[in-house]
Amino acid sequence: MNLLKVAICGGGRTGHLNAILFKQLPDVQVSLHTHNQEVIEQHARQTPMQALLPDGSTLSARLDRVTSDARAAVEDADIVIITVPAHARSQTLKDIAPHLTTSKPVFIGAIPGFCGFDWLAEATLPDRPNVVIWGMKDVPHTAFELTPGRSIKMGGGKSQLYVATHAREPQTARRQLEKTLTRLYGPCVTMLDHFLEITLTPGNPIMHSSVIYGLIGPYGQWHRKIFPQRMCWWTECPELGAYFLERMDQESQQLCAVISQRLGIDLSSVKSLKQEIVEAYGEQIRDQSSMLSILRTNQAYNDILAPMVPAADNRAGYVIERESRAFNEDVAYGLVLLVEMAKRFDLKVPYIEEVLQWSVAYMDGLRGSALDYFPRQWPHTTSAAA
Ligand SMILES: NC(=O)c1ccc[n+]([C@@H]2O[C@H](COP(=O)([O-])OP(=O)(O)OC[C@H]3O[C@@H](n4cnc5c(N)ncnc54)[C@H](OP(=O)(O)O)[C@@H]3O)[C@@H](O)[C@H]2O)c1
Image (cartoon, rainbow, N blue to C red):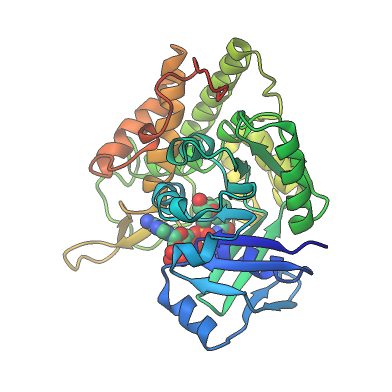
């Protein structure tokens, strides 16, 4: 079998776990690009990286390269997998762009590919005929409790991995990508017809923002108050948050229907959030009767803490963290994109807009957002990026 050179950009939880899994395979070389000195030092000391699996077993790996040098990480890569959050992807792409090979196809993808990774990569890597842009709908497994350079815990895995390419990519490139990802992940890879199936799948952007709005937004019971202890995202989800989530889910489905109809593309794979969660977790949800009960009684969601930090000025208790990924990633790159897409079709999404406006004020304004790369002319485009 040919040697497959994989570069993973981002030495966080997802980066660690995928790197270890790939190193279990024959003829796969893995380099990891990270700014985390601890990961680099552990590698230099020849410390093996370990993945702790849900059944209690352990996988061990030694990566081929672990480096903060973008050139060394990606220069000979066949496939580059970006595992940094959406708000950090632009910088990562800029860092690696000058060092990507031009002498063979190079498949550049994001896991997960949400927040319009296809548009970002197209804008950041122009005039690269050998670059094939792709994204995976979700992470293949949840990954948590990272000890940098040493170990990572693997959570539940997805039975199917859905992958899309940028609409510009030819069939030959799609087939080659499917082959490569099947080699890496096994026969669970399914190619989607359109990247919008990833972009429009409801997930963290509406889930996190609605719950925070329900807790501390203007009508929330914790508005301008300090929490006595950290709260769990889902088991303690407020009714108001579930209400907004359900409304935002409906608006997201309306957006999907309008785009499907106006652009004449099949988006039937994009399900409502409620349906996605019920299908993904099934029996783990004790009460499937409403959005609130689904969130509160899903055992897979137990004990996941909301992003909180100690209150300022030595006051006892906690507040929702303004710098959390729920804002920097989900609001700035997820919600912003949904609202802008709806605007382009003159579709009103009042619940999503209400939550977006409040969230942006809470985070003291947007620094970067998906608008930095969302094509200005979309959905009218000559590059078939619709
Ligand atoms: N972990 C999961 O189970 C899970 C589940 C669902 C979705 N996701 C998604 O997967 C993506 C990666 O998540 P993760 O859990 O692997 O993240 P993580 O453990 O926090 O790692 C993210 C990595 O991105 C890099 N990075 C660069 N700039 C950053 C910034 N401004 N803020 C944070 N990280 C930055 C860092 O890499 P270096 O320090 O190595 O340079 C960091 O280690 C995110 O989009 C997340 O929403 C993860």
